[in-house]
Length: 469
Image (cartoon, rainbow, N blue to C red; front, top):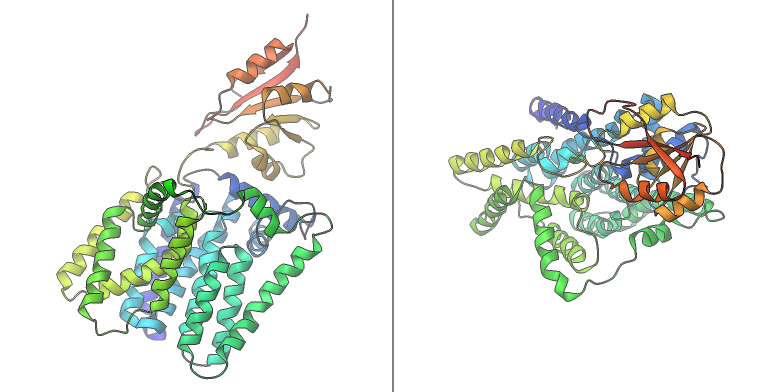
């Protein structure tokens, strides 16, 4: 690794700079606000074990977010910097893993791809779990393929695989592959024993944390199944559309179908030509096939974030393919095309991956207004902004009340709760049915006259009062 520091260090710095670029393009995704709210409860000391929160995720990422809040203060930047750090470190880990597995040439190409491909770049500046999941997976892969000190490296491979599970449940799909790869690569010592020993430590910590919460809240395993709606096989008529959708999302890794096809063609041609470098791990291809089959056949939502966990594997086979092209001219042409599509995708209106779309743009400005103008005891009615209100207005004497329908809103208003009452609509909501229901039942909704100038998004804020006779 010391020999390649002059090359790898600038690459890592470029990856870091590129991941900083989209950090302020768009506002928080609702899940970012939710995870940040949970982490804020930990960082503030109000609920360090989340005994009162309905958590449906393992705790490792939430505690990493809490550490970021402690170190850098509570802000969107602090929350998203965790993903930037994980995404940047993943570039270095990719180089280390591929160098151990296939040599320096493939390692440099693979690290370069992970640095510039749009999907990992766009997901890094987010407060979502997936960048940290990938970071721990890559650390496990590096340890699994590292040759010296086999017992220690097997232990560390298992430890990082356990941390991946402790970050997101999907880490369970990766763990058997890490164990298999460790067993194949390490022929001396007791690799399986030491891997399982390392894996058991974070897993035991996660389960201990989960058990502490059972007296007040269900296990996060059970809660995740409830919020997700359970798992099962999809009806066969849906298999065709799902196949196309998952293939489309996989192509997003490279910026679209054209660069993805070029990179995959390079890999297939390299396989046929019997390259001089080490043969590709069959376990790697097996994991890709296993992951795709599970996500295709089961009723797992086709979301781009799920694709991020296989990005390192796609990068590995694509780097393997580019390294095996005999002609420097064709290799350079393929790289230029891929980089061109990547740069086109890395725009605020480019590839709609990660949080690169403006559904809630302007929400932080709305919350800034509420923090400065809402009186103590104010009740804020909403139907889509609960996680945002919980995070941005944390610890303020303001109550957020969710309503699923105009009838439920009217029912709550008739309780006669004291305090100012505000009604907020997100940009994509139709406010007319709710406003009409209020008018028909003796309530006036006064639109606050330009309380703030939104640079992005159009949130509607109303003050609810009882109308006179």
